Image 1: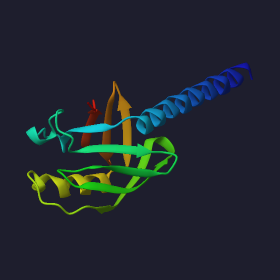
Image 2 (image 1 turned 90 degrees about the horizontal axis):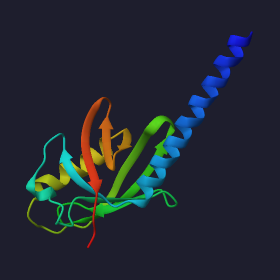
Image 3 (image 1 turned 45 degrees about the horizontal axis):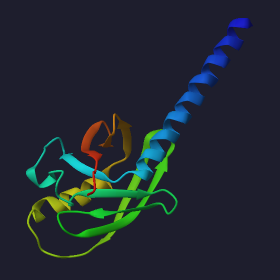
Image 4 (image 1 turned 135 degrees about the horizontal axis):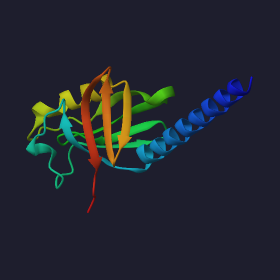
Length: 142
């Protein structure tokens, strides 16, 4: 009987730590402008830190996602689900032509395709199943 109580106490502690960890990750997701570093494991000079392209912002209070692709502003919605799951839907974007357009639609598509996220060491990773599809760092806006 005593070992069952101990097991229950340990399980509750683990669940509480997981919830606190997820709350911290959600707070960081919401309060941070994220700059794309790699798309499907590939870095590209278009993702350079000094540019203001390929940036994502999440607003938890509005369940909104906004940002910039190659040069077009985009917007949509997101929903965080249990266990680090996320659903993103890009619903619109401006339609200007600019350099690196060949990267913009795949960027939007991968945002729509992701189903989970994680934040470790100031890095946001978006996943589709077991596959890492995009990695972001904190965008230092000047």
